[in-house]
Image (tube, rainbow, N blue to C red; front, side, top):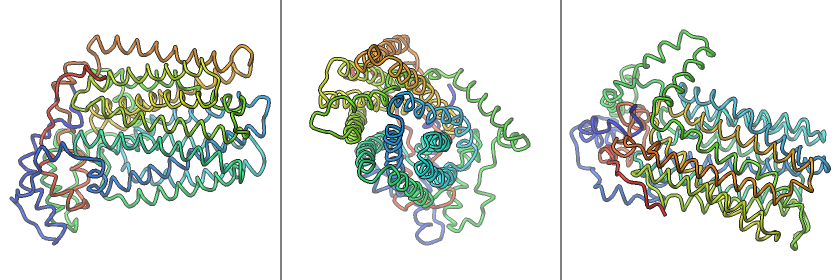
Length: 554
């Protein structure tokens, strides 16, 4: 099995024990010290880490999570405002038009997520995200132009460009997370936290988007979204460290730790050439190739990597879920137009439905952490199967009941399952994939999911507009619920056959970097981490024992 995010850490433990406190002293005084081992944390301390510990003790993660929070709120503002704008402009064929919007938002991401993955594995991920945020701020202003002209076509153009930027952005956003934390436990908490924030921002942003659209018009939401992009770029710019994994040599990364620590001790980065690992063979070879050839080479390498691994099919886990819930936005609009239940304005009802989905996603992200563990990858896989079943149950609720508030309740159930699936399927890939491949793997994972979501959304929107008497919300919900349960059955067969997280390699191999602690190699090379981060580092380098098992999730 290829080395993964937490493998081979033991090989650098002795060096880290001797030098961790030296790095802290160097940051404080600008001088070098060594052979100091007085700051070791106990295993109990590491296991007891909380969300507050993660936020308060990790400056870089704080800036990242702030950026993630702000940008997600802005995106939901624009999405709900765009739907309302289309509803106002096209009354009769609005379902097909909204389905087209969903497809337009998803297709660029599908085709560019692979490119984004290659960029994430060959460039500094933080710098790439900053650049894309600035481009996103400019792109969002095109929605204002479309609004002024009252043009649905220009809305589509703006959505297409914004989605293209998102497609390039997502791979870096997903793959930078393991570089910001130090243990598997922290990675699970960090991933759960991002899922929770996405959920909260969906609830707040979508409800706010519905409210602002009804009160001030969609244009106010577009302006606000542009500002959130700039705020996100500012926060990411303040993250310190080098996040370019292409500068690491997979075989010799562990040898670079001492050099990186020496530069950290020097404090002023004078010996940059000595402390920066030389590019691996692939990077050197690709430097003389055209960008297109390099991209094809990197993509082929990733496909072969997944083909030869025991977990390769897990890149389709989200995609199967997306086929189940991809048309949900079309059904939300249809539900918002049915009856009133005391709420006369459809924009407000749509905002409430989106807010319900956000609450469900928050609950799903919190529950997922309680029933699965990074130490037991089989439990993550079983957890994903349970999540698909919950998605199916939520849609069956939509098929059986008519009350708006009961439908909101089942929206919470359905979205809890989808968030649960998204988080745990991401954790499986982050656990098994080595850092130099993670950007491309997450790009594939995200691209496949959005492709299936686009198919589901367009087919549902087209059928509903074709014949509303036959293809009702109830019928479409029943079909989507059945799809979710069917995929749950298929993934159960996959799990029982001992594949993916249930494979023997998943429970007997320590998870690792390409020869060292990637987050340490990358970020400490500039000596730019908090003092607390340095003093804790020696203890955190101990290999994390993989515990066999995974049943008993429920």
